[in-house]
Length: 187
Image (cartoon, rainbow, N blue to C red; front, side, top):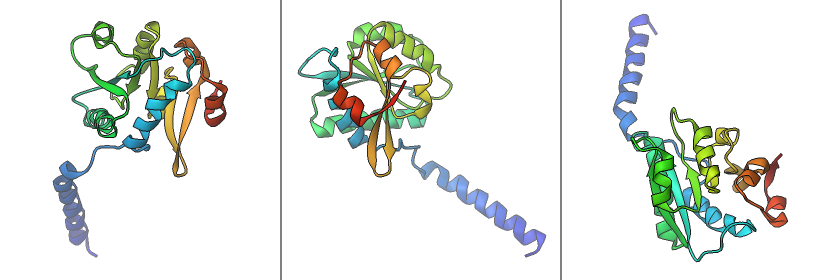
């Protein structure tokens, strides 16, 4: 191959990526959304301090203008709708002018799912949620170090629950030994 042919091949590959990029799917969480919905709907039944209600109100924190966040949030809420699980999904866009603290009283949420985000201080979000005793869950591994209490991940071909025990206790959770035996626990 000469220099001109190599250059054309490279240009062709770039053009193909530019044309196909808009068709590429958004980054998907490793855990399928239907499985996330099933685990989240049952997770809080194993928290002895969680209020017993016929329906869980889950706040889904996301960024509307960040496509991966938008898709993850809406796909999860759609999964709850399709499954008929006893969960009411409330979308909370944290990229708007009102702060999370301002949005929480109106939403009346029991727990919060933190979708993938860009340039957001998840630690601050967690502190606001924790001050209201709202339980947190995510599928983003990096958010565990920011203080999220529960992460859903894949281990092989099945879902695994990871519990950040100090964070869960700070939120007021008291998970049963049954859950802690099944989960990977971070002290």
